[in-house]
Length: 378
Image 1 (cartoon, rainbow, N blue to C red):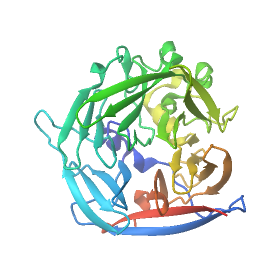
Image 2: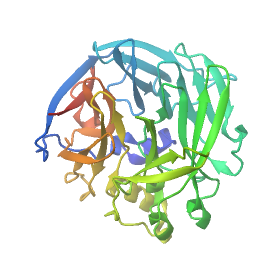
Image 3: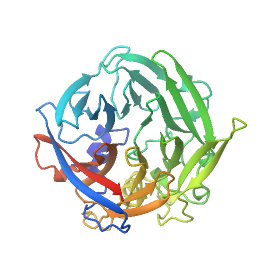
Image 4: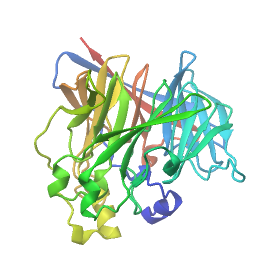
């Protein structure tokens, strides 16, 4: 599929089909960890997809439930991953005051669904698909001069939207200027939006870009991943494995930033600002080495993060990605090579860490296929 076509069809930038994929037969380096690999197939009908580019998992009624945005029907499709069957679809309105133009970014928890549209609107829905609240970002308190994304067209960073079971949506927020402006990297914010079913409350936490961004330019690899889980609020960037934790002081409302799994350097070369054209941006974004989002496994009390090496050829035959495993305090434990059949879109279930296959390796259009890696500590 032509890359330009994907950009036009998915302007929010979740271009999953071109993610660098990896091979799953790694040799573990820590003898205290065992790995179990399994495949899961869920039958689908003609209105459902064998590959979803925007997804989420939730736990509900003792089951792991997979949710994917179906761009052909403009709906969310729900599948019972535990019992391997389709559950339901929630179709969105295309016209009217509660219309949702697209679901380029969404998350589902046991109570609500939240959807972000572009750089402006945030929706909260119930599990029947009724829009309970629609808010405009710049109408939230304290958002003057800030933006949900850089002001120019940007490519997505394969992020997982953080929406806790306490109904707190956590988002990175930027200064409302373009990347090439010197002051874009002066400050970074993290926004918490709490929805109680009727009302919205929001708080804004001031943090910062790493010092690397003061001396170098990394183009679209500057968008952070944000996660609130395991009692931690953390963020990281595609250019480094360093994870930053925001910790609130006991005696005040101020916050400290703590570096976890700290790395002092990066092997990701910067991008020249003079080369910041569309073609160079796309090439840099898809072919550079990078780190993806950390995710917490509450069943095994581990964190996972996928790392991709540099792409060495246009055919992507030499790409390699690895699954990095950390304990609950982000202390490094082990790393294994991943299968080139997989995307770096992953989520946690009771069965383990679940990946989707890339489009080239879908075995049948009649099934939705998953690959699970279960990590056991001895």
